[in-house]
Length: 127
Image 1 (cartoon, one colour):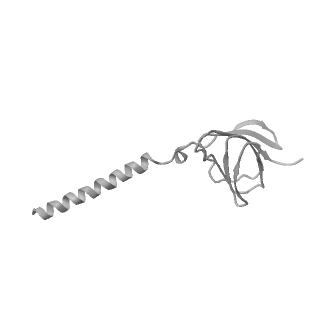
Image 2 (cartoon, rainbow, N blue to C red):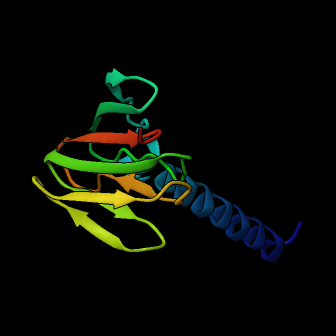
Image 3 (spheres, rainbow, N blue to C red):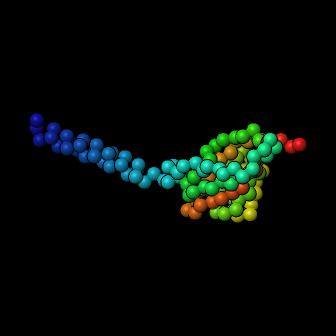
């Protein structure tokens, strides 16, 4: 093997090492939002007409895009959340509320550094 071939091999090794380093950094610097667990609701009332639950979102937590058959009302109590639906993209702050008709796809995310807590009311039927 000539000196030219050896140098090419060293450059190739350097490129492989650089890509490996970039891959390691990409994994290490992945935002917490990607790794956060979805929020687990605490049901306070559940009957044939309505379900009321408290949902706590740790920083980075998100429900993921979903839709329910029931109409939904949400009232933010603590923190800040981002609501993304076909109707709007809104930042929710304590005391703000939203309404979503049934079957509306939406995602609720905590993009802040503080936990957020909200009441979620799902209207199953109106008697």
